[in-house]
Amino acid sequence: MKLREYLASFGVFESEQETQHRCEVLGTLHQLVRQWVRVGSLREKLPADVASSVGGKVFTFGSYRLGVSDFHMWTFYSFLTKVSLSRYTTKALTLTRCALRRHIERRSFFSTFYCLLKAKKKVGATCCSLLEYFTCMVISGNRYNVHEANISYVKDLIAVENAYVPVIKLNFDGTDIDLLFARLPLSVTDDILRNVENFRLTLRANKLWAKRRGIYSNALGYPGGVSWAMLVARTCQLYPNALPATLVNKFFLIFCQWRWPLPVLLKRVDPDRLGFLVWDPRVNLADRYHLMPVITPAYPQQNSTFNVSASTRSVMVEELKIGLATTEEIMKGNCGWECLFDTPNFFPKYKYFIVLLASPPARTTSCSGRFNSAPLNATTGQPPANCCSMWFIELQFEKSTLNLDLTYDIQTFVENVNSQARKSYMLRKA
Image (cartoon, rainbow, N blue to C red; front, side, top):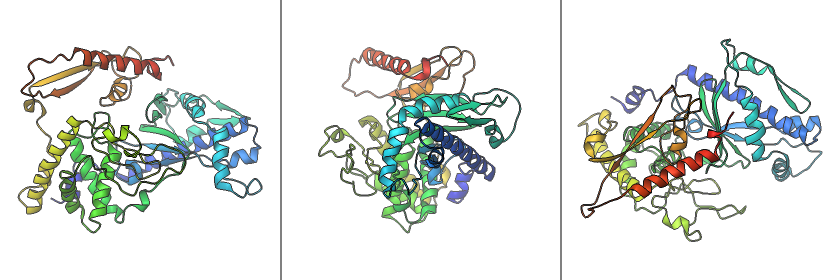
C-alpha cells in the first residue's frame, strides 16, 4: 500500500465539505474582526471613512496554513492591518504600525472582543447560515447591538490572557479555534521550501506517527505541531528532490543521529532589529540550558521546544531509532506502512505509574485544558455530571535508587495548577 493511501485510511485528509465549512467560518470571523476594529477606531474619534479603512483581518497559521490540518483541529492567527490613506502619510507602513498600537491594543482583544464573542452565546434550535446569523448584529455609532437570535454558534469560550502565548479559545459553529492577537506581519513559510506538496504529505505522516507513538505534545515536554513541521521542513531542505516516502526515512535518519543540543535552524538567525528577545545561547543564559532547540524561522526567533527535558528527549531519540529501523524495512519491502504507525504497548512496558485524577466543579468548563498547560492533554466542552479525566505518567528508576519520596513534587504540581486556575477565567463566573 502506498504512503498516501495508508494515511487516507486514518482520515488525515479533509473532505471538500469540511474544507468549505472552514472557509465559511473563516470568512464570517474575518467580518467580525473588521467590525470590532471599526468600532474601536470610532471610539478613538477617528473619522468614519478612516475607521472603515483601518481594516483588521484573520490569517491562518500552523497546520491549517501549511495545508496539513486534521479534520478535528484548526487554529487561527488574528493579525491586524491598516489600509492607510495617502492624504494622511506617505510612509504608510511605519505609521500604520504606530496607529494600531495607539488605538487597537492587546488588552482590548481580551476585553471588548472577548465580550463581543461572549454575546454570541445564544442557545436555540433554529438553524441558518453563518452569514445570516451575523446579519442579526449591527453597529450603531460606536456600540455593538446584538439582536436576539435563537442560534448557538459560539461556545466553550475561554480567554487565557496570562499564558506564554495569550489566546482566546472557542468553538465557532462546531469548529475549535485558537484565536491570537499580533501586530507584526512575519511569515517565512513560503520562502523556506521548494516542493510544498512533498512537504505536506511527509508532515502528515510524521504527525500521525508522533501521535500514535505518544510523543506529540508541547505541554508534555515533546514537540508540538509547529516543532514537528520545522523538523520536517529541515529534512526537505536537505533532500529537496526526494519523494515523501524517502523523506520520511531520511527524517528518522537525520534526527536520531542529531548532535543535540545543536539547534535545528531553517534559516540564519536574524540580528536583534526591534529590541525583542531572540534565541541566542551566547547572550541569553537561559537559552544555554535548552536540550533540544528547534528555532522558529521568523523574527524574533524562539526555541519552540523549550519544554523538552532530558527524560522526554531520551524517549524521542529512542522512538526515532525505532522509526529509522522500521522505515528501512519498509524501503526494502519487508513490511508495510502499518508497522511504522503501530501504537506502543504502554502499560506492560513500565512497572511504576503516577495516576492523576482531575474533575471540574459543577457547571464549569472542563478544566483539563489548564492541566494540559501545567502540563497535560487538553479537552474542551461542558463535561457530563461526575466526569473525571485521568492521566498515567510512567516512572523509571535507577537501580541505585533505594528510596524516593515524591510528596513534595506532587504537592507543588497541585498548587501550581490551582494557582493558574485562580488567575485565569476558568474559575470566574460568567
